[in-house]
Length: 259
Image (cartoon, rainbow, N blue to C red; front, side):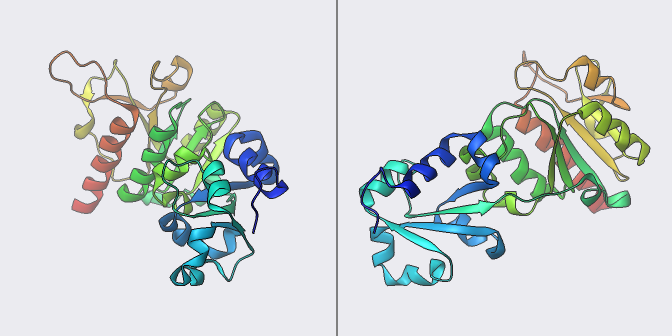
């Protein structure tokens, strides 16, 4: 059992929680809690850490005994955990790798294209909602918050394991490639004249969602085939980025279900 926070395993774990650079270097991210751990594909799990109390409960043994694992004292585990009330299990999971082609499903293609989203909870919610709405993939630029941020991972509620995504250095180039692939792209924008629920999303399509504070840059917004608007009542000018994404994805889902 590891009883010291100066142990090399614990130091490495703490760095992986805190530093995006370390996660990229090791090509792993952190999953915490029994639900998320159980949803992780077994061949993605590289290392497991359990608390002393979790380990001593024999009912928990089947969850982790097939993996390489270390037992941490309760105090050490709590010190390294990223949650207020740790559940007693943390896993290092290898980062998946996808391509744009993994997301293109002919007429069933439905993409979410993100520019500089900054809130990890918003990003995690969009990933989770993407799965629920049948989105075939998420594309984000490299100034979007780290998808492997522990808060983002928790917010996905397991969808991180099932929704394809790519992080691109040149979003404009990628969007132009989507045009060439026949994907029609829409931007929710203040200049939009048609309401979002008046367009046809039953063919290959994608939606742009911009930064929480500044929206889409002009450079990216101008690459949309059409601007659309989300009607607002009262004095509200815009919605939370994750809420806007949810409305658009589920409208496409509704249309496709109704055929």
